[in-house]
Image (cartoon, rainbow, N blue to C red; front, top):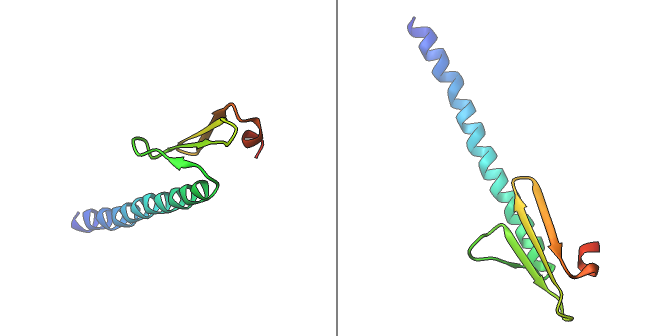
Length: 83
């Protein structure tokens, strides 16, 4: 009976490590995404770090909102939305 309990604990440890590595990888990927967006002229919101806003010289605005693996893009700057 003791060996079965030990075996279950041994299996659970790699799963926990895998979940932690997955979360870390997601943060790293989002960090790279945020860096690219900032290099393209978007400003990252301080209130909601998944919101990016870009104002054009002609008064247009484009916003990006990241949710899990989806990106919602909206705005009145047609040129920016085509990129």
